[in-house]
Image (cartoon, rainbow, N blue to C red; front, top):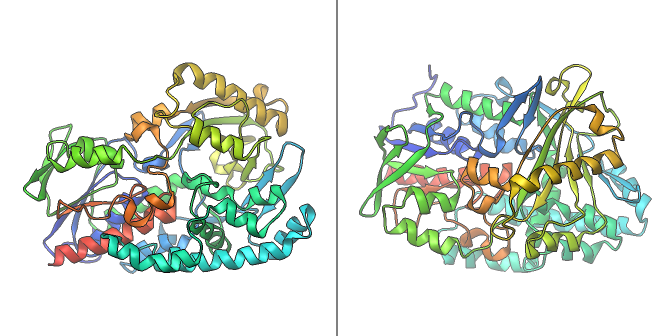
Length: 502
C-alpha cells in the first residue's frame, strides 16, 4: 500500500525495460504522482545488473562498482524515504588493485596519503603531476557532471551553449592524452586512464571530460550492496511498488503503437495491451526504434541513422566459484596485459580476438561472504572484446576456449591450482548480450562515449518527432554506468513531468 498519493495527477506512463535507468525513471515518475507501469522482458529485473544463483554461489552480471551513492539515495528521498530501508551499502577498499605482468601492483583508493605513497613507489616525480590532474578532474566534474549530467540536450543550441566551457577544458583531447600531459610514468598513465573502459570508452578516444570519474570516485567512494548489485535492484523494485507502481515481469514488449506524432499504446508478446499518456524506453536504443517503433515512419528511419554511429565494444565474462577463501585478493583487480594501446586498438579498431588481454577481476565474497557458500569464493573475470559487428566470430566455438585462457591467466597470476578448485563456472558472451538484452551487435554499453556522440549527439531524452516518446539509459545523455543511467533518468523525468503537467 502506498504511503503517499501517487495517482493524484490522473496521468499514466509506461517504462519499457527494468534496467537501472528504467527503474530510476519509474521511481521518479511514481513519486511525482504519475501512475507508472514498468514492463520487463526477462524473468528478473536489472537489465545488465541481472544475476544468477548456482550451486550456492550468487553471480552478479552487471556493474560491480557503485559510485555516487547520493544519486541513488535521492530516489528514496523524493518520497521521504531512506535507501537504507532497502539497501545496505558496504565500503570497498582499495577501490581497485592494479597488477602488471612484471609483478608491480598499485592500490587505487581515495585515501590521499596512501595514494600518494603508491604513486611515489612507482614514480616520485609524478606526485606533483597527479595533484594537477586531480585539480583538472575536479574542474571537469563540475562542468560535465554537476552542471550538465542531468540536463537534457534537446537541440544543437543547448550544445553550443555548453561548448565554450568544454572547449576551455580541452574536451577534444582524450582521457589518456590529458593524463599523459600531467603524468610521465606509463603504468601510472594506465592507472589513471583505464576508467573509461568501465563505461565502454577507449582511453585513447574518449573525451577528457570523462576524467571526471576520478573525482566522482574520490568524493563519493566505491561501494558494494550487501548481497550483490542485484540487491540494489531488488530494493529499487520494492520501493517502486511501495509507492504504488506496477511491474510486469517476463513479458517482452512487441510494439509501441503510434498515431500521428504521438505514441499511444504498448503491446507485449503475451497479448497485453494498454494505452498510456507517455512512454519511455530503457531498452537498447536501436531495438527501441528499429523493432518496437517499427510500424511508424520515425522508428525505422531513426534506427537506420543510429546504425551508422560507432558502438561500444562488448564483454566476455567468466563467472566461477572456487574452493577456499582468498583474503589476499581484493574486491576488484585489474590484471593488465603486456600491451595497453595496442590491445585497446585491437578491440576498438581492428576487431580481432588478441592472444593477450587485460582482465577485470571481481571478487565480491572477500567483502561480502554471503555471495558464496562457507569456505568458498565467488569471482568473475571480465575481458573487453569487440562487438559482433566488428568481430563476427562463432562464440559457441570460441567462448569455451577464451574462458580457459582467461582462467589460465588468473591461475598464473593469482590462484595457481585454479582449475582444481573450480566448483562451478559459466561464461557470458557478446551473443548473450544481443539475445538477452537486444543489444545492438552485442554492445555492452550502447553508443561509444566519444565527443561526437555525447550530449546532443546521443539519443535525445525526448524524441524529436514523437512528442510523448522518451529515452532513458546508456543510449541517451549522459551515458553508461550507474551514475550515468541514473542521471539520464533525472533528465528524462524532468521532461516527462513538465510535459504531463502541460
